[in-house]
Image (cartoon, rainbow, N blue to C red; front, side, top):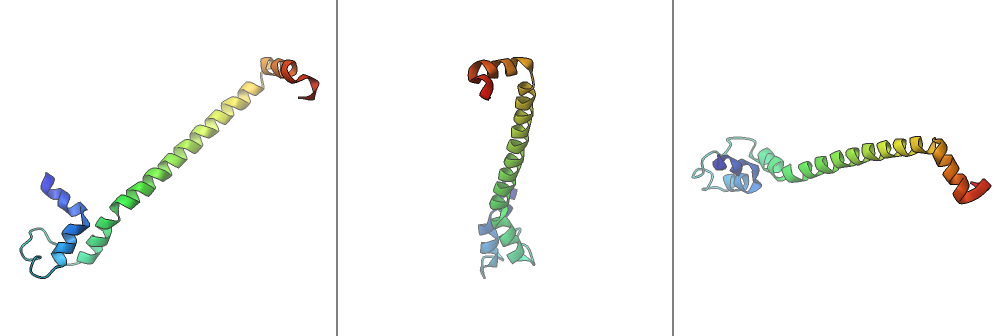
Length: 91
């Protein structure tokens, strides 16, 4: 439940390292306390970078799809007539 959320916060592992408090708190790791502290503090930045990367890939794919449909519409006869009507022969 909610009690397990404490492992996501770096503060929990910091208090586990303080002498006198580590023995009073339940669930403190016996070893690799510093590793868990670093991993817990980097969780949010890693998730943010993953979100931004996924969004960039999605936007790039969406832009490529829009460009493909735009190029397909430029190949039609109606588009050529419209270009000729708007810009004349120099287009």
